[in-house]
Length: 509
Image (tube, rainbow, N blue to C red; front, side):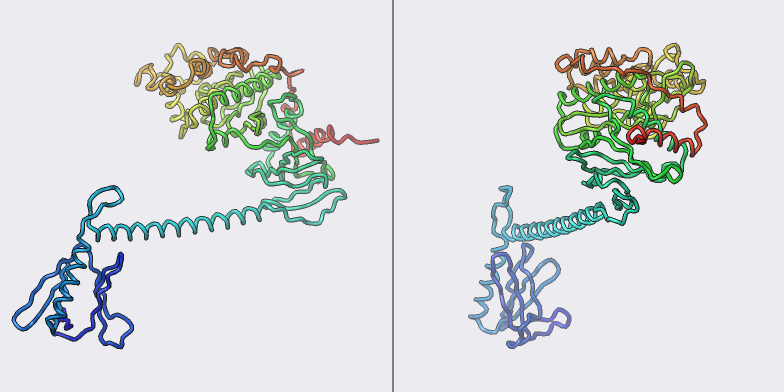
């Protein structure tokens, strides 16, 4: 056939081929019979149309698509008829009406193009998933290698030395490393096995560099050793240092728990109201014991509630705990903001044990909805979220607020928005049981003196089916915070932890 050039309109002999395959309709040509590669190839799609533009003595066909066209001239009548029929069939083939995957009528050509696009997208998605899989495997391998202990020579007889998560451990050979549990500003925690029992070892390096942090470590160790309750994390050992003069790193050994409540809440595992009830009951038992020792936890949040596979929990992290003493002013900046009682937010320096009840109420709500109840972005936003759910107290109801600026702020809110809540708790939790709703409302009361007490919460009908009064034990004696009144120098803090260590490693005479 002769092909008309698009620029100079000259006719040039070319060797055309029409390929009629299942999903590929193309018209291409070679410049000579000996060529192995097509000079050009035009796909025939839904937008193509064929026209007979023959004039006397010239048999011509035009294949047009939009503003572009291909014009060919065919010398013999027989070849002209064959090519015209073949190209008409190709165009009709693409315009034939068929049903697509959604049982809608479309052209066969469009369906082929859609199928090709879908196949290309599927290939892209498969390639993307493959890359993600490879990346995840590489990340997992890197994490595994990072958490794999690298053993070093130990200078102490009976001890082993290794690094994991860029942290050096120097612990007795009785312990076998299992895995790294977590790390943070407090140090690195590993799971280890001793005599068939798995334990957690917290390594706090350079523990005495910051005296405030060191004081919290002393407080936590003393409280862990004082407490004896199944719902509180106890201490099993403090690994003995070489000597007090070089004492810098503190190793605390405790029971190893599978996870924490924060991870449970935000996991994909079901969390029924029965689970929530059992978790809350255990937390209240722990709180009753803590309060009976004249201690306020002050930092209750889901990540400080450890959980095992049997849904048994243990409250931990007592570094911010303080004693309940009449006329003692306490610090405001305690408890993660989302779980902080309103009286603390409003600057009350003399608060009570019910600040812990408020925190548990927030955790209770978070377990029920699987999202934080009051996720304030800042101090003011936190108070606004609380008022949205609980309303705004009158000035008389703010009798417990002694901070003048805080009281003025609340009075302004009262006159601006009124007393009624924008969306009360009952509207936030429409599907929970009446007993659960009643308990939640009594735990989240703005007035700390009207907030439900722990003993009353344990006796609430919500726990009627699971309550075991005999498990609701109290501490044998109040905890002694006397050491807090000392001048706690580095040397004194080292001595205090050294003395705690000696309870587990007494000197044998």
